[in-house]
Image 1 (spheres, one colour):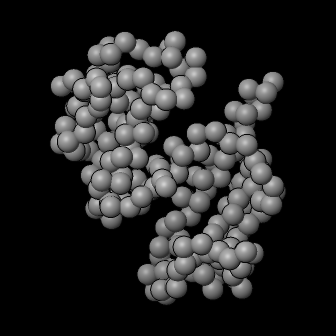
Image 2 (cartoon, rainbow, N blue to C red; image 1 turned 135 degrees about the horizontal axis):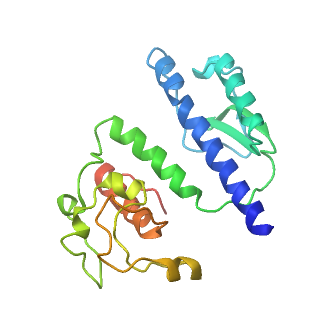
Length: 207
């Protein structure tokens, strides 16, 4: 039962992230007309925008997103822009246990930076100069594209830290699947995506 509950919580968080990503075009369209002053972090308390429109969002579309979020039993959602709360609902003032949410967040970051031309998701590990240590990547493994890693279809089956016993026992043998042809929940892919992101954008996603 706990595993099922955790899985449902994970799904809720991922779906909440998807809602925010889906709303990004609304923000981009409005902010193309009205720039805003951005800060990295809020103060001791959260500042709340006077209205979604004041921050460049659409109240009507946010209400539609809330209705959809509630229909799929989303636990909570906060939209924070420049250290200011634009919109929120649910149990946003409580801690919620979550797992592997970094995969959703890094996918969203790749969506943003690939649309801006900073990252080409069709580049291969070989083109990016990526390798591994102490076991170097094979020629076949280096043909995995960024988009293959985002889809957990890299075909790279190297051991990584913090793997569960189930992941270890189910990991395919190296070289058993060509890049892009087989899905496997593999933390190696997302670790590599973090390195690629920092290399291509010059921005840090970890401290």
